[in-house]
Image (cartoon, rainbow, N blue to C red; front, side):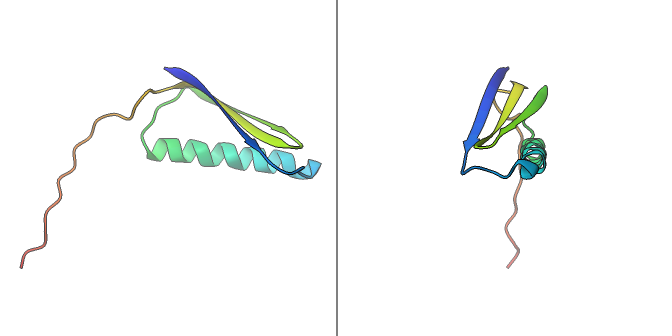
Length: 75
């Protein structure tokens, strides 16, 4: 298990937009990690006028193995 710090630099953001943007980034990353079946312990979100950041703690090193069976259409 590892810790990842994801930092997104940007133009200066309006102060009243910081919290909604920070929360939206956290929700989006959480949803995408769950869809990809990548486990993690916690996500902390941070914001400043020129950056948004996430600290993902206890993230799995890889996705679990899975098998898929695909069939071709009958002619």
